[in-house]
Length: 346
Image (cartoon, rainbow, N blue to C red; front, side, top):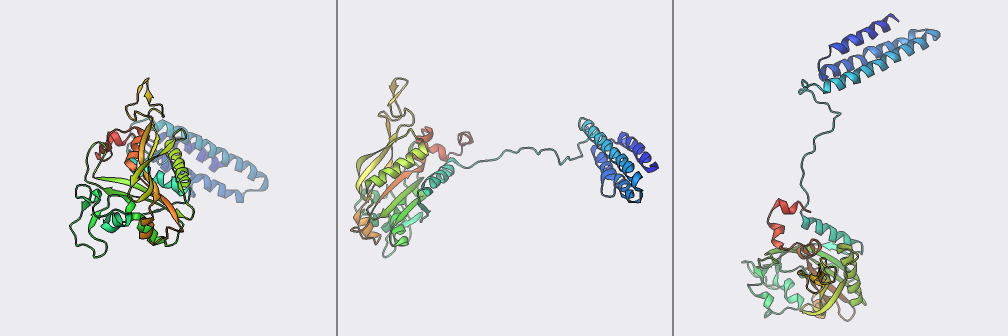
């Protein structure tokens, strides 16, 4: 018991002499450490008789509790002083540092990928530097087609392939359609292809490089109702349940029949009016999303698939455009300006 009284008295003296948190940490180890003074007292319990052991143990535990209370109180007091700059309290939360975020196009790519994964579409990737055959001939676009002009397509100065022709920066993700047919061989095919595409344009709604995502579905008995159902699913999943899609007849070389896809204007919600004034964005309640249609039989033949057995549909949308429609962005060049004030909004 003399040891207990001696340590109890020394605790108060030692706590009083502590001047900073580092000394307090050392004192804590001195008393509560594995070989500390209080543990040394507990080790002596085995030498006590049965009657004395209970009283002895209670006394040691009381010293321990009192020491912990004094320790906490002293620590709180020291934390309010200004002389502890050299001490790091690892129990305190760290400082939050500013961090970046994904670009809004990257966010859209991941979101669109997840939407189509839920209906069993497989995301693939095909070359950005492509041959004429895959970008034009295989898609039923003859050599006289306007899209094959130097003003519409970025050709590369490189030796021509004897079979596939000139090299170019792919102007659309549709160049992956025949490659996917060759890869799979026998349908069914459910492809989503998201990639960079290139066209020599630069204005408020066009950039020389932009992202497209291509959908391709080929199987037996595929028809326009399957296409419309898929588009309805995507539009509601991406833009919201209050947005509708419609098909408007159009012409594309690689689909027949072909359609433009319009969706409910996200600004006026299809009313064509904003504050009783005609909507400046759509003027009609609809916005054009992109092109689609049933895969042309000649394209199926290029893909080594029998058009008498299989049919399919395809669509191609610009990712920058769908983001513009979702958030009301009025200039596509904002995506690539690097202006952090714009990018931080997303």
